[in-house]
Amino acid sequence: MLDDRFNTAIKRLYMAALVVSIFTGVGNMPMYGRYFVADIPGFGWADDFFILLYVHYLSGAVLLMVSAYFLIIYSRRIGRVARLSNAGTARAALLGLVLISGVLAAVKNLPSVNLSMIGLMAIVFTHLGAAMAFILVSISLRILKRRWLRKIP
Image (cartoon, rainbow, N blue to C red; front, side):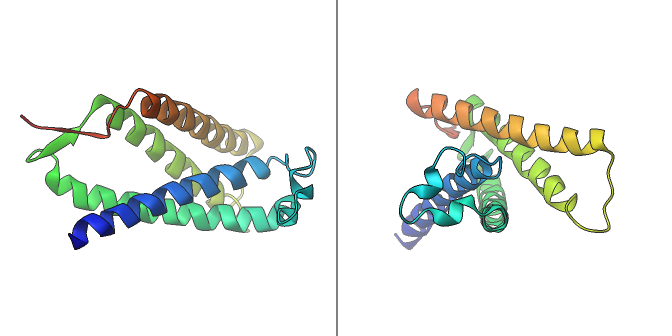
């Protein structure tokens, strides 16, 4: 019983971190000042690039931790009780690409890291494209009620 509540809490943490990551990621482009989202009461912070960046890093770190948790815990189940479905494989691959490119995008901001403009563009566009693909695929598969895992008969 405790395990079910804990997994539910972890899944909710994953969804919250995902929503915050999407919100702050879109805001870093910068869209919220331009389209008056920051004028909504309580959203004035959404026009500050550095606040959005740090909240984006924090939510990305939470996504990394939750993904590592599920990778470790559910890797024991895969093969015995359940396997990744095709939908789960697509989501996991895209989420992995988002997380890896996000870590690279954070590393490129360190003062000792110097990349060419092509390298910077490749990292940023890979992160943006993978994030958009993950969002679209996840929403589509959620509408179609496709699960991450399938039980082994």
